[in-house]
Length: 114
Length: 112
Image 1 (cartoon, helix red, strand yellow):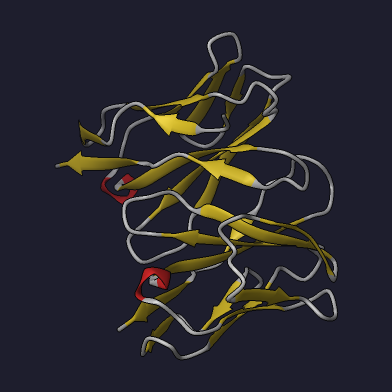
Image 2 (cartoon, helix red, strand yellow):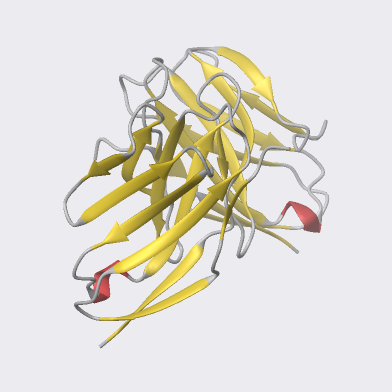
């Protein structure tokens, strides 16, 4: 499978715990994006990387959220001290680094905070 | 402000009919738009895109129309099939880096 891969697909955690998600983009894509999607809504932009550089972060990304892409390939998104409001689908997408090219999404990680 | 929204939350069509899903956007600086299909429990799947220097683009059974004057785009699906049942999102680029702003989606239901 050469698409965007996300792990795990589902995560249930207790409030206050830390969680980490992983995204493996399409191999030749140097841009990687994280989005969050709640039920009945469209995905909302969180942050994106150009290679290993994190170039933009949304105001949605509180201090409890941190994303990394250390080698410019896979990325991780960590949420510390999870809250029930963090329950959502976390989507990763990747694209080529040129302007106006399609972004391809992974299947997402469904986070449930109980 | 920046927003991309859809006119109708739910669209029901008969199998074999054509479907038209509409979308309005507010950011006149957006110059690239994508339609995504999302099935339950899955990530958005790329359908078709269009750049602002075009007003129409066709794919397999799908056509996207862009009207920059009224900031409106639509997705037409020909001969709608049961497998087309899903939520459809339009998205427009905002700012640098190709980040996308999505609308809330239209649920397409195909009736047999």
